[in-house]
Amino acid sequence: MTEPDAVTVPDTIRWLHEEGLIRLAGVADSRSGPIAAYTVEVATGMISAHPATGAEEGSDVMTLAAEDLPYPVGTPKRLVIVGVTTAEAVLVVDLASSLAMSINGDKPETAARSWAMQLLLNPEISLTTNSAAVAIKAGPRFRQSFIPGSGSTIIQIDDRNPPVTTITLNARTDGPDHLDIAPGGTGEMYLGARFWELRQVMTIDDDAWAALDEQLTGPAPGVSPGPGFGAESHPAVHI
Picture 1 (tube, rainbow, N blue to C red):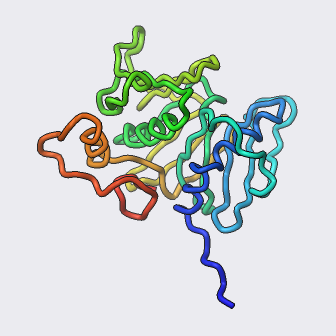
Picture 2: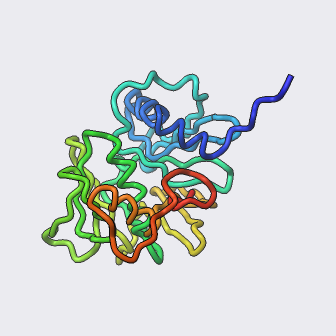
């Protein structure tokens, strides 16, 4: 009898986008306080729910198996896959738990693009940005626009359940919630007092972004087509 193949990071990400994110969103619905993030162990499938810190009660991390998650009903809300931790778990962050989030690094827009495309899988979400490097012509749900009062590059996330979450790229001052991306694609995710070290941050590079834009609007001169989207080891979408 042959042993089953080991579960991989792409397997885990595929499951999350097929149904896992919706089921994780259901976990938060059954709790009184907000859950800031989830980690999904790649090898075992065990899930840890990390409540937002600062609450007087209910801040203990809750662990459960994938089969114990709620049935997938509804939408993934503002959940995004951020990357893979050094403990070999996929990190999922609920952007609804933060009014202000920042992404910092040499090219923070590559991670912002990944978040944006994941968020657009939820038909209830619309995005507005003042960044040409992040915007894409995907219809009225993703608009590039002047945003009054903003001297920074930002993305606003609205799912009709206020308040809106604002993501700032290379914020002048870091708040308690931020993703720091290091050269080579590693990173550190901070949510209040919680912290995760990432061996790989999920990103969409320039070629992949141009290829997607070409599919929607026509070819961009002088840009080679990206090899596609996915979670392989060396694709245009890096994880």
